[in-house]
Length: 349
Image (cartoon, rainbow, N blue to C red; front, side):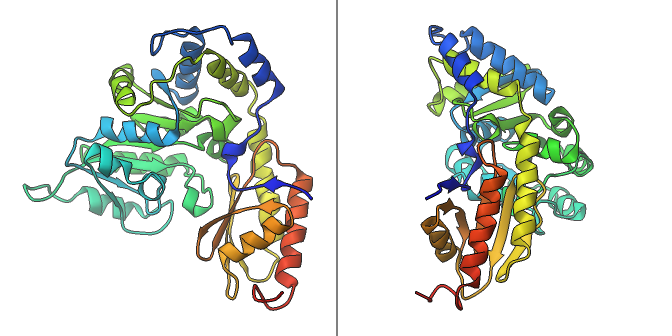
């Protein structure tokens, strides 16, 4: 039976070139937190990719985001972001628990709340009884909106409102390279309005080092002890950094993953009991209608060798990445069609 795992792009396959690079650098074992030359090359490469002065590697993108929150907002202040943003719903409330921050979302829905909502949130006059808004966070792509890519113009407009209100800006750019490919622009262009930017390296290129945070030299200098405080002082880093560097040498799979998601979305949109959130990047999000539930549909798919992720009672997510083929997508669509056509729903045996 097939085993097609579409649950997350952190399953992205590494390349033979990445394995060879890791092997070649296996003897690089340095003690200092930023001493390893392969790590320094990787951090410089990421900083250049994102148009920032410096970058620092992290064990996870959640930790990178948490440090960015702590850099941008003092304890007791407010962080405002999009509804359903990863920092709100998928990071165990780290900003509040570890940073002492009030985490909230602007009014509206999805990845792009109206600018008026940002204006309303950021124009409130602070007083002694209300925590001031110190930091604005945008997520690009926005996971809970099915991988929506935020246009540069929207981010610039939100950034202008934030700057006028005296707030700092962080971009949760875990999947920023997928957004840049979909929008036919550069990651640096999308990152330009922000003080700090996180990037997932395992979701992007299948790297053994999971993430990085980029920003000014001063911000990264401040980030280093915060990372250490959270237990993120990676060592040794040479082999893993070399593999990540080799992975960044070829990101042609990003466009292919977006195309595979479009192929999957087109096939699923024709099926009964399914409502599709039109994919822009490598995530495909569907709403399933009663009597189906997300858990039951994913269980049926697993029985025929396809793994998908239930992200709510009636929502299922699929992710494409390097290692998934067009044939895998065709098979997934065919199995979905058979499952949904069979009888009246999940009660059928």
